[in-house]
Structures are given as C-alpha cells and as structure tokens.
Image 1 (tube, rainbow, N blue to C red):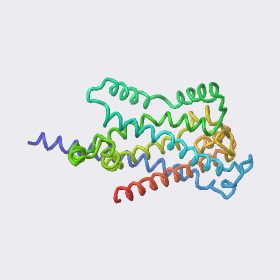
Image 2: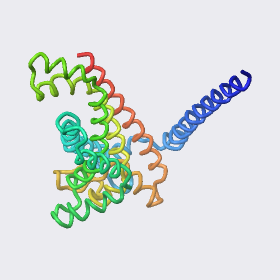
Image 3: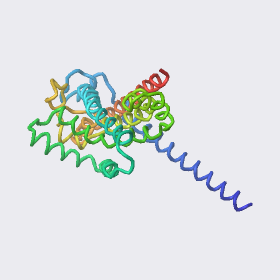
Image 4: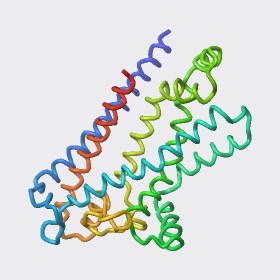
Length: 274
C-alpha cells in the first residue's frame, strides 16, 4: 500500500515537474523575445518600402500572408480529398493505402532544406519559374501536404461508423454521406491540421531561400521574388548590422502567428456551432 502511494506521489510530481518546465521554458522564450525586440519596434520598421536605413518588415508581412494563403489554397484540397479517398473509398486492407500512409509519415520527417532543394530543381531549373512567390508556395504546399493528409485522415476516422450507417440506411449515397455528414463532423480535426500547417508555413526559412528568394519588396505578381518574415529575420541576423530589428521582426512574427491561430480557432468554433 505504501509502495503504491509512493509511486503515485512520484508520478504526480513528475507530471507537475514536466508541466512546470514546459510552461517555464515557453514563458522564458516569449519573455526573452519581447525583451530584446520590443525596444526596436519603431514606425520606420513598418514603412511601405524597404531600404537599408529602415529595414522595413512590412513587405515581408504582405509576402507572408500571400504565401500562407496560396500554400493552403493548393495543399488543403489535395490533402482533404486524398484523405477522403483513403478512409471512405479505399477497401480495408488495401496495400496502396498502407504505402501512402508510410510515405506520408516518412515525408513529414524530412528536413525542410530537402524540400527547398526539391523545389529549386523542379520549379526553378526544370520549369524555369525563377525565384518567385509561386515556386515558394508550391514547395510549401508539398511540404505541408503529408501533415494535412494525416490529420484529415485521423479526423475522418474519429467520426463514428454509426453516422455513415444511419445515412446509408436513409438512402443517401456515399458521396452525399461524406460531404454532408462525415466531413462536417470531422471539421474541427481538419482545422487543427490547417492551424498546424499555418504555423509551419509562417516559420519556414530554408525551403523559401532556395525557391522564393530574399528580395524585400511587395510582390507584383506570382512570379515575383518575395521575402517572408522568417526569411527577413534570418537575413537581418545573418548580415549582422540590424540584429535589434531582427529581434523586433521576431516579436511581430510571434504576434502574427498568435493572431492567425486565434482567427483559425474562432472560425472553427463558428463553423462547429452552425
């Protein structure tokens, strides 16, 4: 009895210690970024045009929003439709399904710089797009596609089979059942995958240096080179002349990520209520 009680106390203490360390590290990182970056946030940092005196991050903010929207527009339909096929249409025990799942899990662990080299070879050299917003978005969409596929697949699996059986019993076809019943029920899980994808897109650097480039201006079209906020922060830090502004960019990037996640969660709640 004493042994079981001591074991329980130890496990409870380990859980609280791990939780405390996690929260403490997170608070320290956020506090450090704010401490180093907030003093360098000035109106010049949000100028419409970038030059070496103001190192404005405003063009990078616009490029980040466009890059995120374009990447999701490409990856989300492919990821959701592929997951629907694997869960709803492919036969149980299908070898192709097993291969696709293993491939998706493998691709999720590949370093982003490998995706950058892939995008450079395919979109820049083979297709001749050059350093462009479209090349970067296509590369990022390929990078987040396994994440969207796996999260959507798990969300669809979490929907009880009784939903499908009830729909079939009322005479609805598979297509109507999937799009009118199963997908709405799985929507919170799908939106969680989208939120994770947004975080990965916004924080990506290596893949975009090889595909989108580092030109600091608002892109004129999809074939213009663009610099996202994470690339902007990396370039400023690498140059060594504007490290303070690099920390300020990190603060703005942190705020943008939190705002995007909050907006996504708000949209998810409204959709679920409806």
